[in-house]
Image (cartoon, rainbow, N blue to C red):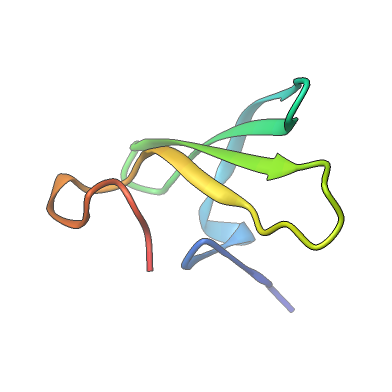
Length: 64
């Protein structure tokens, strides 16, 4: 079973790097087309992950 992460399944993305920051964990991934994406997974309980860089220009960098 694959799970969805920001509109793509984990099997479709490769983790490039993962960094612990003061606000949460930043994870850089690359999709099957080679596009990088940065997602912040906040430390705050109940906070949702936010894609803060990457994605397609036509959608403002957000994946659906």
